[in-house]
Length: 107
Image 1 (tube, helix red, strand yellow):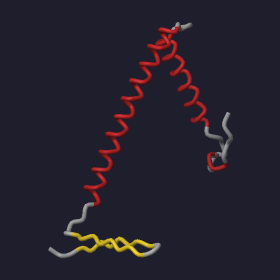
Image 2 (cartoon, helix red, strand yellow; image 1 turned 60 degrees about the vertical axis):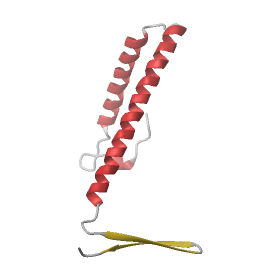
Image 3 (cartoon, one colour; image 1 turned 90 degrees about the vertical axis):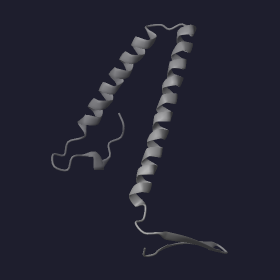
Image 4 (cartoon, one colour; image 1 turned 180 degrees about the horizontal axis):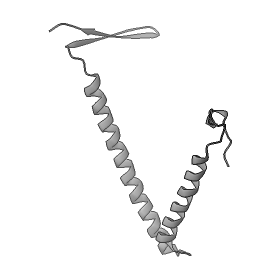
């Protein structure tokens, strides 16, 4: 079991976080069932190679989904933080220092 941090203890009841232990146990059982379903009891080399191909495909789908989510988040932040008025950027650099100045102007 992982170390227990003081910040994880419930300040009202003083109880340790049982949900993390329960979540880890349920996750372990779910993963075990998936592996048993996909692999069976004793996989051969051919079955292991097929399972590795499935894992690679699922990892690729996860990476693509994560990248798409990052792009969507970046676009959302850009729209959210875009200035209402026209702006100009000025970058000044000197030895050991750089300055970025944002100037907004009225319409």
